[in-house]
Amino acid sequence: GTVQPALRRQQALANETGFGGRIAEGLIRRKVEGQLGLLDRLPDSRTAKPALERVLEQLSQSSTLSEVRKLEATAAKAYWAAWRTLPVSFARKDRARRPAHWRTFGTRVSPLTGAGARKAVNPANALLNYLYAILEAESRIAALAVGADPMLGFIHTDTRHRDSLACDLMEPARPKVDAYVLDLLERREFRKEDFFELPDGQCRLMPPLTDDLIPTGPRWA
Image 1 (tube, rainbow, N blue to C red):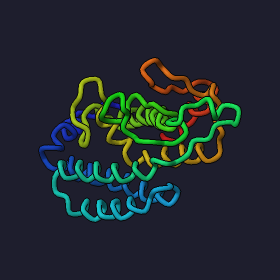
Image 2: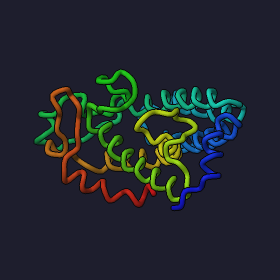
Image 3: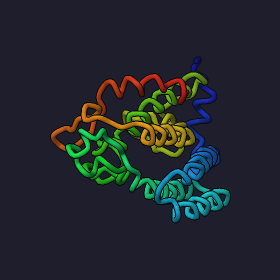
């Protein structure tokens, strides 16, 4: 794409003019709607559904970016709690050799960081992180294709070495990735060779599993 100076100027000023809040509300609304559509497939969705429905109602009344961020966090807490007991299947010969915390989804917050999902410690969260990284790359390409600056975000604040706009653009597409991971967990028995554990407890993906995930880029584009 061609750099669009006028677009980038509007993008940089969007949070001051209030337009950034309108964009953020639209992106998060689509994300929460997507999450709500997946709840019937999750084992612990009873309390999550009314929580997400309330968030959607409150989003229409939100007037500031701060309110949108708080509502997104409220939805995320309820949504990921519904994933907690989702099982992860391993081949029979490998099942007993995998740690207990690898055999369910668990918490989205990594115990290695205490905040956020970086440094996943089990296969399910490592799968999500890997696919989200592909989605982020596609989101960066999408921003550049229309001449926008991938670093100037609305929901995500300015951070060195982070494409904040790409992270914003990921939001409504995240439930699509989540649905793909749900399908994968439902149909696939994993092997011990699919993952390895670093000395600090991080869980990483290995080929040929990664070979199956890399071609999903066009799906997220």
